Length: 287
Image (cartoon, rainbow, N blue to C red; front, top):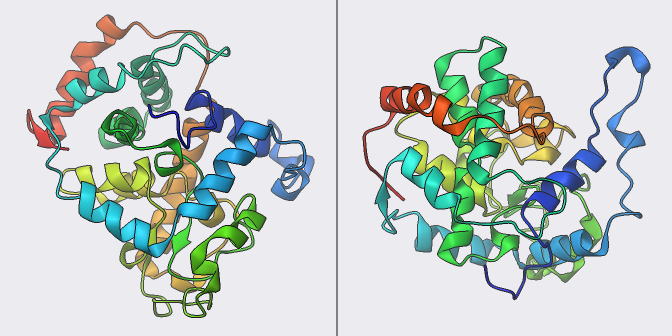
């Protein structure tokens, strides 16, 4: 990965910060709310610097350019398992918290979903939801790969983490972009808005011809914390979004809490997952 614009030592450090902000609550009746945990004053400097870059640079112009650059999907032709092995070349030697490979991380999420008896498309979604991080291997800086996502082209919602950093964003000076609706119309549907560029939006576009709407929503919106965890952007939602929100909320705990240092047996699990992939994807797809 490029050193410029990469304040995180590893991609997992963003996941670790999510766990700090959204710790698992074992007893839903304890009365704790997310507001009790959402304190950013004690965030590590590298996390704050990551979000400073992200919020400064995620503009409408940049998002349009990134879509023109990547969404023709003409970088590579490869299958899903091949893409997992490609992502596995992104080595996080600097991560002190885990010795697991990228494939093992993906399998942990999928196996947790499988253990709970969810449908095959749901298991597959868990397996591939983070595959868009191969953007790092296409030389994209971290601020354009990970991070909580949000809508660009309208006012930056106050619930977005480290909101103050948007003061450095050029769109903050545009009265259209800083109105409630911005370039959108009320209840236009989230399918018709532009989310900040990253691995979610990229992978959603890679998969949109192959998975059911519920799985696509899980992939596109799993980092969209202002929406699925903070209740923002309701004025842009249509009826379809209200249905999809329930599936994204169902997926979220598997995304956050399945990581551990107990490695899955990749070779033992591989035949099951290759058969599962073949049920939904051709042998090669465009990336």
